[in-house]
Image (cartoon, rainbow, N blue to C red; front, side, top):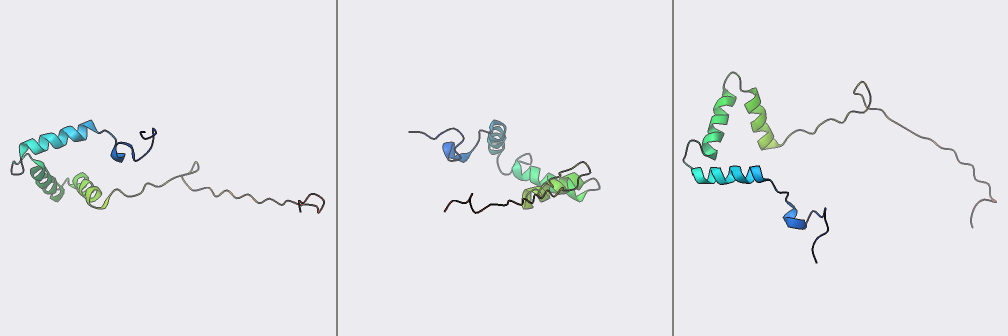
Length: 99
């Protein structure tokens, strides 16, 4: 008996990501000491971050190390949150109550 569709435990809980898999295979084929390998790419990213136009690289590094910041959820035309409250007053007579 298999898992039902949508079950997070099915297939190890991973979605197929063929591009990621292809990148990993190519990086592994380059080897660890190759300047075009993963460590070389990381080294270049750090060099770019230290340069004058390094803000995108800095953001990429921060996202990889700390995770991306949570995105704000806006509700309303001006971007502000709208608080919706509902107060009901229900009058129940003793004859309507179930005992």
